[in-house]
Length: 86
Image (cartoon, rainbow, N blue to C red; front, side):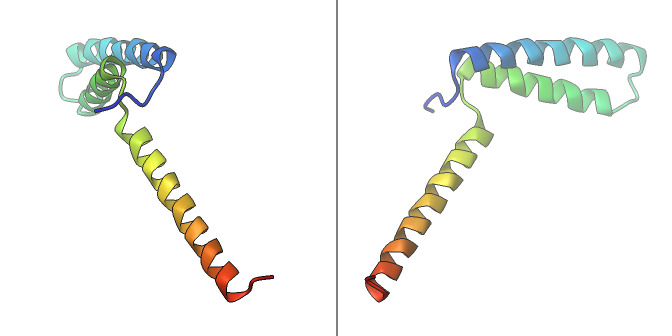
């Protein structure tokens, strides 16, 4: 797993993740039957993990998609230049 986010981005993710975890656990103490706080806690934990590992799977997917799209556009341009060399 190669890091794909910067150091400042990682620190922001860790800070916001811990904030989300603290908020959601405080709310879960008062209302344990609400499932939305559990979802926020899981998302906060995910952000902390992304910050620690400096790897974001969504960023990796986006980069892969844009690289594939760019490669397809280059292939299409080469194909069109063969058909119409002007």
